[in-house]
View 1: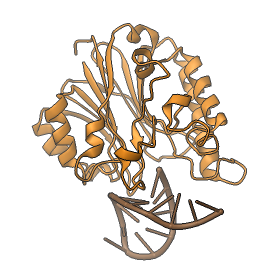
View 2: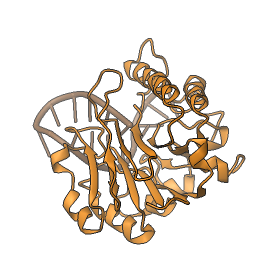
View 3: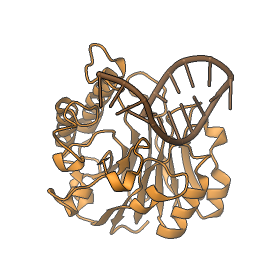
Amino acid sequence: MRLVTWNINSARLRLPLIQRLIGELNPDIICLQEIKGETAVFPGAPLRELGFEHQHVRGMKGYNGVAILSRHAFKPLPLANWCNKDDARHIAVELKNGVELHNFYVPAGGDIPDPAVNDKFAHKLAFMDEMAKWSKKGKTQSRILVGDLNIAPLPDDVWSHKQLLDVVSHTPIEVEKMERLMETADWVDSARALTPAPAKLYSWWSYRAADWAKSDKGRRLDHVWLTPDVAKKLKGNETFKAARGWQQASDHAPVVADLDIKL
DNA sequence: ATGGTGGAAGGTCCA
């Protein structure tokens, strides 16, 4: 099974990039975040034509939105709200082998890393706490958790640990929330299982750089986590950095995981 | 300390 997670930053605008990704990587399952449109305007038909006949989409107007697309049948799981908001940040399915696949778009958190003055940061921290509760409660379930988690946990997940300590996505409180979450079900970070620190790993590069590749000021915000039983089947994990250089690219690169699972 | 870019909307809000 080849699985891709990608913050697409508008599924409609970047449909050609999704089509190109399918042609170049031939994934079985694609998890998208920030599809940025209502479910009804998701470009499902052209993706169905490429073999992704099974689609579970949760969009909303303007922002957020997540989708799971697969070549293989799955069972959609009931939609859940997080932090009492119906803001399309999570969608999940059960695969044929009984493994649950959860696709998350964690709040970015705004600019100021202080929950007392920044509601967006408070929302992000509350969201992480709620994920930890959910994860702990279901810890015996075989699961894959993917998505744009908007946190780069390790010093080598950012271009400068020192310079990003006060920057939302890499602050100690966020990193601690992520570590607590990982402990709740012994989640295996598939990228670091295969490429340990101190190798630098990034999945996002800002649009605001004059030359994103040259400055290479990246952060690893996109993740594929596995419960320990599923992690035994992990065969590969790569960031498909080339896609960040495509015409009209998303600011996130796809993360690709290969698992020894037949669907 | 600041501003830099990009998407959805058709206001600004969000990243």
